[in-house]
Image 1: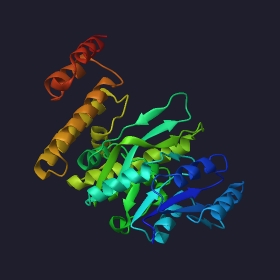
Image 2: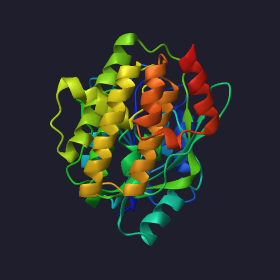
Image 3: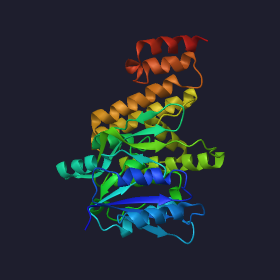
Length: 331
């Protein structure tokens, strides 16, 4: 039996599919099966997959008779995989040659780790950028309060740790964030501090409807995590708590104040429960609140007085920002 199954969903991926597959087949670690799930493609994707299947026994192709979406395809891959480890890969990204070797080394050296990701490089835009997510489990748990700290195409996991966790297609624009935000509370996460995947950026026009769906999905995900503190959420206070852990620009002074008061409550609850690492959690909230103050939609003397005397955050604001805040409040 092979050690690793690589799950790659694809739909009409003819433009970049060969480059993605080649990056997998040319890995320094070779004991894997590449499971490609074709979501009823209508371009030359099936022809490309047939050619690879014919020349490399590690490539296994499953072709769907109707389009079901990437979340369900990955879940099907989870069910099919009979190997100790599972890796995810998108059909337009590129894996660095030592990706699998380095991730498996982490698993062998740290048996407590259930999911291993890495930094990744966004390319295809005007300038390449390395996304450097937190490395340690405790830092990642806090990171997930505001955004997904794992690049989906960098994921490798132990199948035994995965259990019954699956992607939820109801979160179609944020299914990875939804899954990993739950999974991280059941196993140890780690990100290798090196870019092991090149993530292709596409210039697409994202509709306002899709943006709103993503915002709504992320709101639910963040709420679920904050509920671990036992907060009785109402519509009137939910946004304040979310804004305390996740930056929202252009808040009114009144909404900034609500976020600050919610942040104080969260800090106190965490000091009692120690659910999150105290130092990492408070540093995260301090950073969010300071940036929220800096990006407020308006400034006035009363707001400045509150920030200085009542907020508890004035001491953390850099001197130059204190000066800017003061003069903005005078205008």
